[in-house]
Amino acid sequence: MSSTSIRFLYVTTKDIEQARSIAKTLIEERLAACANILPRMESIYRWEGTIQEEVECVLILKTEAAKVADATKKIEELHSYQVPCVLSLTVESGASKYLDWLTTEVRTKSP
Image 1 (tube, rainbow, N blue to C red):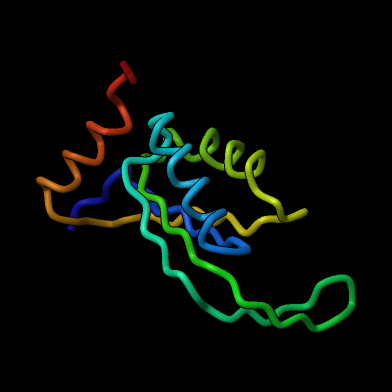
Image 2: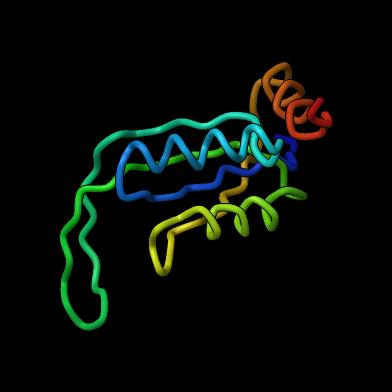
């Protein structure tokens, strides 16, 4: 199994509108090639000493390792949370045609 430079950015958002907005901006700026939005999930976490329960969305962005820092910075700028969840996950392998497409999308300059 060969490794790739592809990364998934796992992001949680307050709602589907925020997920769409962040996704469109990152794709327009070629910081990501593709986004998947999972519209409803429940999160339970501790925040400032209190257990919180919230309904959120999951946004999965597909990009290259070289774009992770800039993509993360842009997400933090656009996000409404004080401390947004942004995690970079390594993709070990995948369909070569898809990986080629993804790489081309984030490397091509916008018109």
